[in-house]
Image (cartoon, rainbow over all chains, first blue to last red; front, side, top):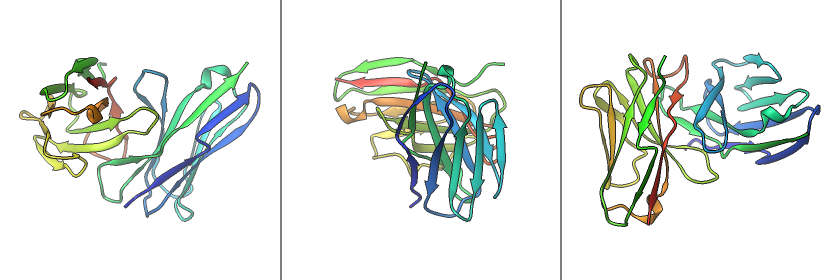
Length: 111
Length: 115
């Protein structure tokens, strides 16, 4: 059974600081997704990582995937208040069509 | 263009009642997914449709839950004899032809409360 673990589960940080959210998963997969969820809203796709070594960047967020280590990271650079949200990673089972989500990381950026 | 839409946005029902939740996927998307999200948790997979057929229903918790997609577009999730533990946000997602390339696009969800 595929398990996806995120850490930390809660992150409070000051504006302007850098931090990394980690996503570990338990079985082979080369497809990983990052989503953002604002309170009371649905999930917004941030990144789609489809191969080992994939790195994608959008604004202050950068995501990477290491399939050998079964690890993805979401790096936040110079955080701003607007990044406050819950961030989920999700892994696609090999040849499957369902996503298994982590528990989410609640990010609060303090002004 | 229009995204995934779900109705109703909120549903309050009493224990033991029957409910139907509707999902309209993005036009042209052949794959449709249902997830359930409890408070403070990530979404959990329920069922996946490719076209009209349920390709994977392994996430349905028991036989009180059933979903259909008769014409390969709109889908309805049906819950019989609702229980308080069914209270959650039910999310629908669609994708052009299943994974992997673009990921799944999520709707706003239906918040179900069973009293």
